[in-house]
Length: 403
Image (cartoon, rainbow, N blue to C red; front, side, top):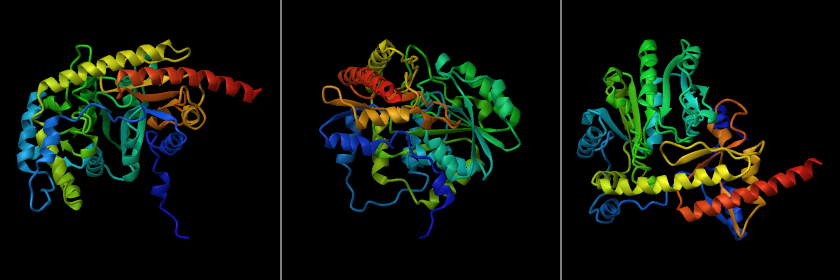
């Protein structure tokens, strides 16, 4: 029998989606599964987006330009200006989701064997994109004990080698919800300039920042003009995950020209998605005010309920819509699967993402989970109750098994 590639064997499974078969079986048994494992908000996609798709009139559904239409990119220029970034239309390349932007960015800037430094825990698919390009991820571990703040610059310095080409951050962070301060970004800027590195920033959650804090884009830092590469997406901003439309933004002309070649190889992003994305830019500010108010309410409720559970620790996230929680179990992969396979409370169970898959360092995150507060408060309350009862029953069963 022909064998698959070594690269295929090395591709990591998604910690967000790998438990889906167990959730499917639970539903077949009549168990309600509360999905807090994935960043799929129940917030309605703006009406202006839905109407644009509904009313799109065409005779032929044609290709877009590989870099996206100029009309849409010119509208994005105004959007980025509103968040403090002076960007030209030809410094934006439209992509099929933020994932493709990251993949193209990696391929355009790093060769096989090159290294990229990423604070962990990080969005699990970064590992997959790096594996696809034979790029080595060098993790620097942040800690739940200080809310996953940026590790010390000394740690970055110690890990820079002749193979280091880039640093990647997600701001606000997925999976931790941590928001990097301007002081932390200044520290990163200094080390990037000192070692002549690229600085990737995944900024897809920039609209979701809480407690009076402010998001700072690396695009607003002029000294980083030739170093900054921003990944963006409409998925989370407009609750339009299925549209799969993103962008790569940089002022570095060599990077743009190289990314465009990858974009040309896949021809174009979906035309329907650009129709949705262009309309999304007309979304009124009141939409985000309402959404942020709702996320703050959900966040506060989730963190309060989790920290009331015996043995659970959950720091307060500053942005996005994720929280990392430490549970009183040794292996959350096993626990999360057990919750789906063997547990229900009042006919319900909860699905979470085991955090081990968000770390590159072996055996880290084994007692942590990522929880997405993307469902309404009643669901969050039910999920927290399920988790508390599940932890009690799991501990009892483990004690019986070990004895």
